[in-house]
Image (tube, rainbow, N blue to C red; front, side):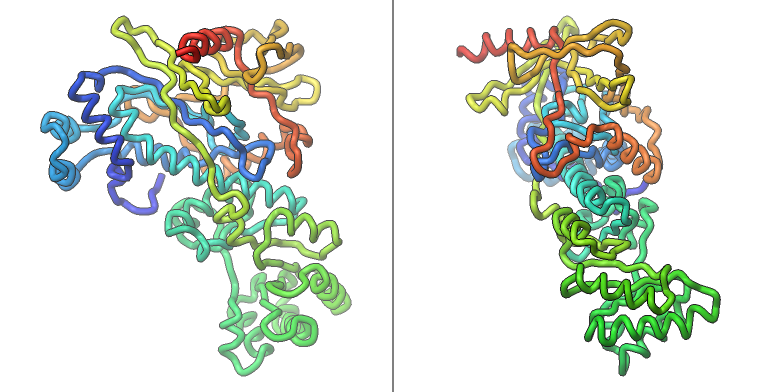
Amino acid sequence: MKSMNNENLSMLCDFYEFTMSNGYFKNGFYKKRVYFDVFFRKIPDDGGFAVAAGLEQVIDYIKNLHFNDDDIEYLRGKKIFDEGFLNYLKNFKFTSDIYAIPEGTPVFPNEPVLTVCAPAIEAQIIETFVLLTLNHQTLIATKANRIVRAAQGRAVLEFGSRRAQGASGAVDGARAAYIGGCAGTACTLTDKLYSVPAGGTMAHSWIQMFDNEYDAFKSYCELYPDNPTLLVDTYNTIKSGVPNAIKVFKEVLLPQGKTKCAIRLDSGDISYLSKKARKMLDDAGLTQCKITASNALDEYLIRDLMMQGAKIDIFGVGERLITSSSSPVFGGVYKLVAVENSFGEIVPKIKVSENTAKITNPHFKKVYRYYDNESGKALADELCIYDESVDSSVPHTIFDQNATWKTKTLTNFTVRELLVPIFKNGECVYELPSIDEIAKYCKEQIELLWDEVKRFENPHTYYVDLSKKLFEIKNMLLNIYGNN
């Protein structure tokens, strides 16, 4: 596993994590074991599901978590932290447990994507990095998957580095896009670090450097005769760009027995130009030549192009993917759900609000996903208390978390537990899959969702329900704290 750099990121932390942790140390709470859930309330673009991503970077961060002398001196300079707390940080490392849903899994609102079980200070200090990493990569993986589905089997390439919010946004965003289904990236560093296939050909500047378009194309194909892509819209796509590309392909590639090649459209009426270009290429006998399109594309524009019968084989998608510009924030949160008392009993905790969407699901939980045995499709997810188990040999009833009167009884089903151990007693126990394995798993898991859940507009709301035991505990806590 590799990081984008070797910088110590332990101080990438909201300052109040340190003020709270100092307080925990002073009052003895730092020894208290607590349980935090990472979950989200709303799916970007009002979609039907999100795609979990970012776990590998969280693991890397946890493994390297420490505070060096400069960090301690910085905190000491604030003149508000107890010296005993600063000494505690000198020897700090993560010693506890983390559970998470594997990357590439479709996930839904209000279910734990990651759970931290740790002493209070350990759980508090990692909050910021865990959230920023999971939020960012899950956002981009989710957007990428929408775009890939709009392309209806045509390859989508991630082209967004120069529009990303910073270096990590470009590198980790391209990684997340690959998990979501993109076939490759323009970002070289993402290939170097994470083995996401990088590729690219030319910009308009290459063509402008030559006296004419033909010479620019000919020089490029002589340099890179294996599957070159020529940018044909620098001057006039139909009058010069495509004809010059055809001429060079015939003069340089075909005599070498090479037939793999492509042109790229980056401006103008992409649908019209692709149809005209396709006919010109086919009439010239270049039926294997691919057409790539780029220029501020997203899932809606790609869907429209497909509806118009555009002759496009590959889509290059940049700014609207790498920033998820139509829905640029993934609102994952990190909430306390339980604490252990002095007897080692797990005591559930709840956050109550007049805004019902912000009421949390208490307790240390498991997440089960149920699949219909006839269709193989995912039916529902259920949040259960940590000590509950499910017997798939008998009918099983789950309770809608948003309605006290609504239940659903499942029969003829298979069940899978989604949260898996990542760290136990501070040691990583999770075997990281390769990026290709994650991307393959993601595709397989999304195929298990009903088409109605995958609609772009008004998708079916996937059930995320509560076990009877959790349902009753939540209502008990609401009756206690909701009346205060």
